[in-house]
Length: 628
Image (tube, rainbow, N blue to C red):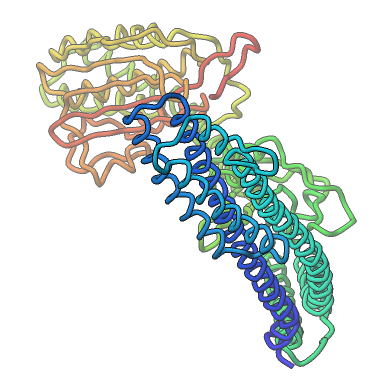
């Protein structure tokens, strides 16, 4: 049987009882109301007739008394007219009562008696107002005599009879009221019994629905919670019948079966994908690990497990990975802001001791995103650069050694050339002078190159050799400007410190940062035409660090060369020999990087160039860098 049919059949007794209860109640109330209305209408007409009849009787009695008060033609005529007028009213009300007798036999007998009294009263009244008679006779007619009640006695008896008629009609109305109350009380009792029966039926239907309908629904709900809460995909719902709830249970069980199959296939795919991912990273010799958003290691290849002592999540062997200090902030940035970490030089390597020797690794951290852009984790790759680091150190040491060894004989050659040009050892021919001038210029350029190579080699030493002290950024710019002011004046280039707002102290190696500022200023003077301007400004960045800005009005740099201006030995094609060795801005980059800062270049041909150096402030509480 269908669920809808069950519900309809369950409610049919309720509907039938409600219909029967309403019909019976309506019929009983209608019958009682009709009966009460009829009784009230009839009795009320008799009561009203008796009131008006008594009123007319009182007026006729007053006419007799008025006639007895004085015998004048006017009073006589007025009393007679009053009597006749009120007699008609009396007669009319009597006819109403006579035609409205409802209470047998009492009211019928009283009306018959009232009819006799009425006729007697009429006869006496007519005789009272007959041809003139002595006043004493009229008094006798009104007051009566022995054995004769007279008008007054008849008046009083009529009052008595009409009062009885009035009283029995009022009593009938009261009985009708009491009957109505009894009927209403019986109706209430019957309604209460019916209502109780109805409530019992409703509770019975509710219990039936709870057992037959809500039971299966509760079973489906519990199974759904078990599947959604604890993943019990083997949970099934009992099939209670063939109705809609039974079909729901069958469909639910079919759905859970499909979910079980889907879960098994998904688990197989996940396991295959995890194994593939693990095998992929295992094929690399460099340490690789994948960190989930919570910071736990999800995947790690054997080199990473051996080097870092990490174990993937879910494994109970090995401690959880605590990243080295240099990687804590970059890893947190990758997980929280999806910012990749790509070191640019060997100064950002991390070292670990493995196999009895110290190994050097260049880390890379890449955020892992879902197609929707959510963070799934981060991949950490440690590229083993121990060999390259040694080669780079060897190269730097070789350059420094060769440069140092070349500097001494080059200085001797330079001194000899200067002595010869001064002709202290004898006069020179024009050709000899020309050759010596070329030799002097070449030796000067070579000596400048060697000095820059030595400076670059010193900058590439471990950063711990750099001594940082607090310095006023405005004073640093002023000192750097004073160092090149004479050269700028020779070329008629203006140097100006403008808009230098109060800025916090910065942590610098004054000598090296002065060298970097000097290199930028010398380049600016070189490529700024006479009459140009170089502006130096110190201020605060949005993140609280300090920005040193040097802007010139020189020739500018084409956009395609801007990414290479800080490369070693890079020179813009087409520039004159005055451009230098191509190491000046590379030294600037190394100096600023050693200060944990950043240097950028913005330029446009014909509109000048702007260099911005951003440096951390000095934290006076700890005497160290304070990166914001």
